[in-house]
Image (cartoon, rainbow, N blue to C red; front, top):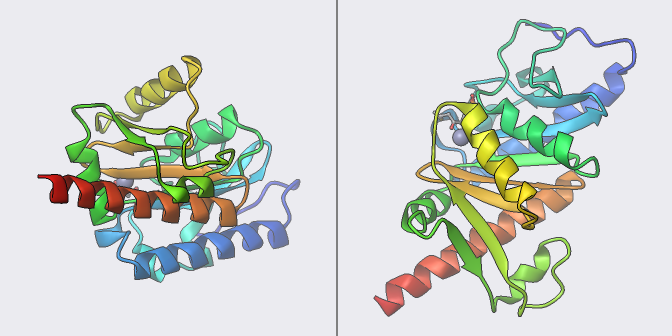
Length: 215
Ligand SMILES: CSCCC(=O)C(=O)COP(=O)(O)O
Ligand SMILES: [Zn+2]
């Protein structure tokens, strides 16, 4: 289905975002982090719109035509295509933090196992790892980086409310896990969001290794 753009958004701008999303998705799929059409990716286009993956597409084969425009309520703009089933989780991030321009969600095996293992604590507490410094605002391995684990649900407003409650409690949030599902993280640009995702994947692998070795 073709994408009709609002007059305020140039084709060049939309294509730039769509190409960046598709390229990132293909690379993350190469890592095995997007099995079986899972995962979704988006970039802010302007204050009122984001470009996001169309639901159900194979993320290892994404191209420009697999990306569509939504408004900040997660509603399709200028197309009959169906946006990611988890679009509201993306637009929530853009509404909460105007400086954030990229949101990434993946389903790696590590993210999935860690989400189940740490669900009873409701949080993965990261401390003492040098790679925590890959997360924006973290300047030392001594800082505590809490990654909450929210219960999974097919009802997006429930997940949105859980994320809102965490933020409204004044707790820093750079990423979250959804139990048995995957991870969400974001950044001011694609490079920062990718750095966050790769660092968190590494840190979760380390935490799982520690659990295994201490068992
Ligand atoms: C087969 S994956 C189940 C849905 C999901 O969790 C996901 O990340 C992909 O959903 P989308 O609608 O964005 O394709
Ligand atoms: Zn998902």
